[in-house]
Length: 138
Image (cartoon, rainbow, N blue to C red; front, side):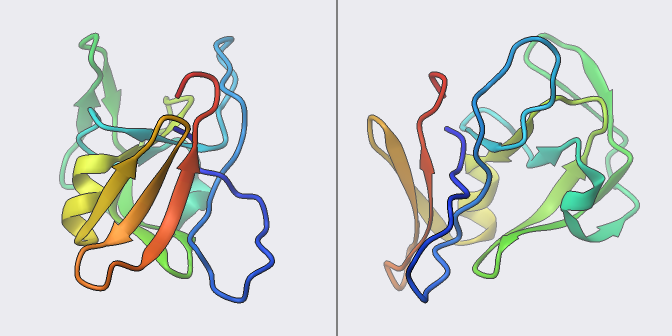
C-alpha cells in the first residue's frame, strides 16, 4: 500500500507521505510501499534521509535471494510526526519499502489494515499519525 502525500487542509500533520502508481518497467517508484514482509525500511533515494551513518549491515537479500548492497543507514523523516529510524539506503532498488514489523516496533504503534487503506496508530495514545491508500494492488 503506497502512502499518500496529498496535502491536507487540517492544522495537524497526519504523517501522510508519498503517492504514485506502481510501475514494472524498471522506473523508480516514488511512494513508500507498506510491506509486511520487509525486514527493514529501504529507499533508493539518498535525499530521503534526515540523518545518515555507516551501515552496520553491508547487504540485504530480497525474497528471490538477490543481494543488494547497503551503502548508508539513518533516519528518514516522512513528516513532522512520522519518522523511520534505522532505514537503509539501497541505491539499486527501484521502490521504497516501509517495513510494518520495524515501524510497529520502533514507533510503538499498530497498523490497522482495511481493504483499500491502512492507518498508523500510536498504541498508548490511540492517535492516528499516518495512513496509506491501496494503489496498483498494493
